[in-house]
Length: 150
Image (tube, rainbow, N blue to C red; front, side, top):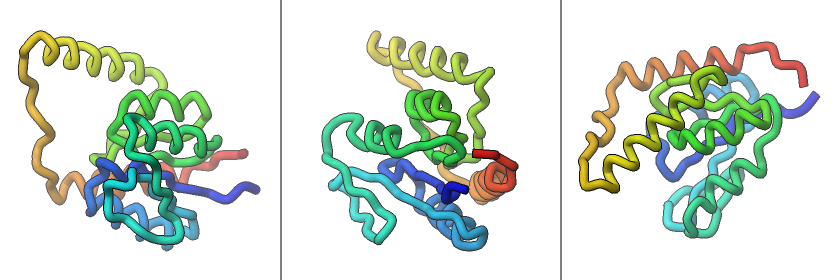
């Protein structure tokens, strides 16, 4: 049986979500890997440093992903990519990406980008709350407890 892993796009992952993932991975004996560009100050045996180029972290993480991995990312495009490899993506806010809804999320992202290119402004993310931490922990635990036969 393959080693169970959590892969984290650490470039934009809130510290609290990262801490929760690391704690749960230790608790359940999973390997927790973080990926970030060299511009970030993360270190450790399970941290992969990637060039600072655009999409470099996403491409490295996607290439390292295998079926059954849990991937923590806010990037909808990356979520769709790893879903194609039979990985389980979720956001640091606890949203588990669903194969039936990923096309909707991609279209929504494209519409917002088109609006911004036209001079419009969209709201940034809301401040992180304890509820976000709890939702993330619950969703991550749910995915870790799924029976996946690799």
